[in-house]
Picture 1 (tube, rainbow, N blue to C red):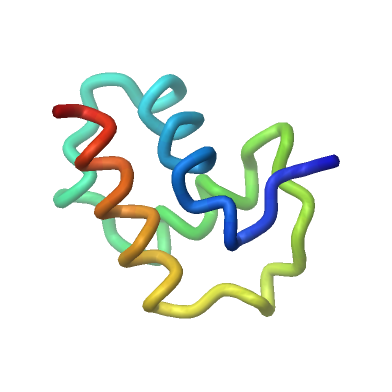
Picture 2 (cartoon, rainbow, N blue to C red):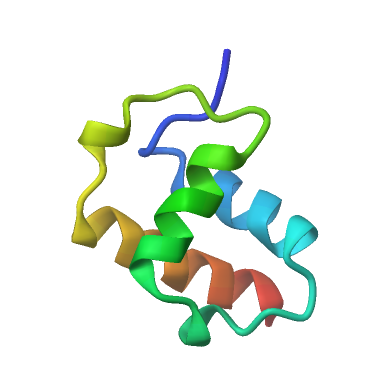
Length: 66
């Protein structure tokens, strides 16, 4: 089963591994959305994503770096 927008922590782990060295705070939400959609395990509708989901992913990604 693939990743969904609600799998915020798993998405953050994937992004931290794929985008090593990237500061999550410097990423625009439009880019973040495209990066999530491009994850190999991601399997959810692009329409189900909103700003709150992207903020949650960004915060989880920051936590993953600590």
